[in-house]
Structure formats: structure tokens, C-alpha cells
Image (tube, rainbow, N blue to C red; front, side, top):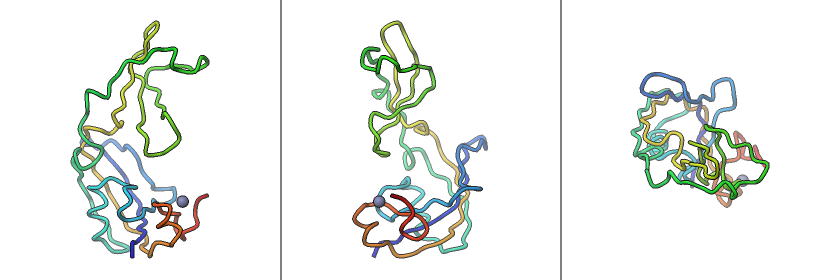
Length: 157
Ligand SMILES: [Zn+2]
């Protein structure tokens, strides 16, 4: 039986800058073994109990991977929608699947746009402060969808 684990987290980089946090928001719930969260984090959370708090350091290659220079590519401007506002630093996904890569616009030329398909957190060692808020068995629906549905198994869609 797979489990759904809920946790609060604050994510910082090496310099202590907060990159992301669930504090003040809903905790994050994930289905074990479904690649909903990075492997280095799941490995440790799977061993914790409700109420446990811990600091977890995840090396880049166990998080979003090292930076791959092959993912920095030039794209003809004509491949973007004509009304797209192309701004350096903007991020977009090619489709709505949340597993598809996020591209960041690095440079905009007269007829070419340089985009970087590396995850924004690629190449970074990540530092998590986590607290487990709940663990429950996954529902049959969650098992078939391959992801968790919030605190009670019916959180989304
Ligand atoms: Zn679902």
C-alpha cells in the first residue's frame, strides 16, 4: 500500500535565500513513488513520522540535476505566438503537463530567442526545513492518477 505524505517546507539555497515555502499556505501532499517531489527529499520524508521536523540537504544531482548546456537553445521568433511578449527572465511551458520542462528566456534578438530548458533550480544544492503534518494510505483514485489529492484524498479536480 502506497502512502500519501503531507509536509510543510521552507526551501533555501546555499546562501540562505528562501526560494520557496509552504508556510502560510497549504502543506504539500505527495504520493510515494510517483516522482511528485525530488528523489533526495522523498527518500528522507519516507522515513519520518507525523510531527517530525528536520533539516534536509539535497545535492543538485539528487534534486533537479546538474545544468545541461544542451538545453540552452536558440528558437526562431516565428515559433512563438505573434502576440507573445518576449521578455528576458520570463518562463513558460510548452504544454500544461506539470512534468514538462520550464523554459526561461535568456536573450531576445531581432529574429531569434535564446531559451534555457534547464530547471530553474538545476545545478543548485537545496536546503529544506521540513515538518511532517500527516501520513495516510493513498486512495484508489490517487493510485490510478499517480499523484496525491490533498489532505483528504479529494483536494483537487
Ligand atoms: Zn488526480
